[in-house]
Image (cartoon, rainbow, N blue to C red):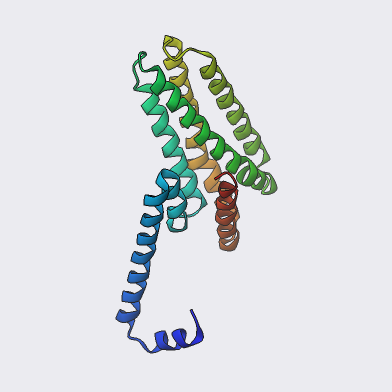
Length: 196
């Protein structure tokens, strides 16, 4: 906003300024929707990013997305081998992106904030999840063991995600200043964009 625009805003009534802010937010949503329509699901994620919440909201959103994919895979029939294979691929992509963001941004910060033991435990959880994913790749999708391993994956993820969301990440947030918290949001999003 230029100097003249700022001066004009100062002299406007509060309701008019509020109306402009609402119009600006509506325009931003419209732009995001337009980008999403042109680019599909990836576009929606990228377009909505500036409108999303902070780093913890981003992590929680990723957790929900991943668990939704796992639950959809669990709900498949053994004859839906192509669907199972496709869902497993989507799960692996979502988990890889999520793990890279956490392992390159959040877990190092945990170590710096003297929460190294928690960081090590979370990295170990990621290794366990990767082993299950490897196992799922080796089992034919129509084999009854496939669905059992998918259920094991869900249980592992739910335990790990709950620990992050209710214990470890809130403890990390308490150690951060508001400025550090904002910088962490920017760093997490920047790391995610590297993978897009």
